[in-house]
Image (cartoon, rainbow, N blue to C red):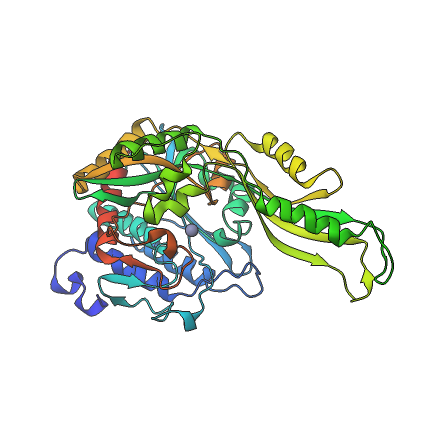
Length: 446
Ligand SMILES: [Zn+2]
């Protein structure tokens, strides 16, 4: 849709369903690549100003905050009917991971619409939901509707690099903007997994693994590369890293994963052995990679650094490991890790963010289920755990109960998991419109 043929020009009032595609496309055309380095990241300021203008246009008062030049987030409060109730936070991030245009079949920042999809970096992670939230709120304001309780809308910088310049900065420095928020919705949940035409599971995120990025450091006796050395730091580190990289931590069931597997078992008519669930998970097709990492702690070596000359044995060698821990496993993991790497390797933490888990119950969950069912009679909402992390980690620090609920109905054959940070990221246009309708119903009932 171009602005020339938008419904406004035809005299019909603009609805959220009309507007969502245009807003999402506008956002995709603002390159907000987050390289992880503030000096080379760009576009967040432009995207934040775009969002703020869309909010201001309908009479909301967006607050813009910058953690560093160009690292911009926007928050607005939409006052509700019952101001004594806790507020609902609706959050999305504005940044995206880099895209290598030579690998894509379209311009990753062109916002092209073809084959029923809107294409571009951020189309599902997560400018789609940013656009849905904006479109719904704008329609409500135009119609003079009032949400049942305060809605706090947050559009954040830097999620893709851990949120230090975005959600964590906002929570640590401007907590007053989130005052009274008791519950939150954001990414990565609410998307469909088709069992058959009569049953689509919508995966609502109720748990996230914890993040433990750490350095393993081996120290040894430096010396000449031509001589005998039985205390070589590189040898010791390599052994520890190889053991850890190949290690399979024991299966451990959390409430969320147990509930998810029970639903899947019933829906697909497959046996799930809770002591060995990986066979069943492998049968889930496109979402197997999303679920597979949620039944155990994991540790993946990601960097190695040691030495500076061919014939010099260095005194130290360092490896970086990306570890992800299940809820309730922080202490157990430390012991497991030590058992695998042995007593002589030092551990330094680079980043630690605790896991989160909430129960799949209560009025908010009922509102999600009802909204999905009203728009898709084959819908069934089920809880699941995300193996990655989101801005929910920051909002958890304020005691907010966080869910991943960015509703999206997907074609059965779409490999949704592969599109996250993937080549040719795209969102179905009908899925966006579906999301708007579900979000509208959900917000009205929450
Ligand atoms: Zn994301």
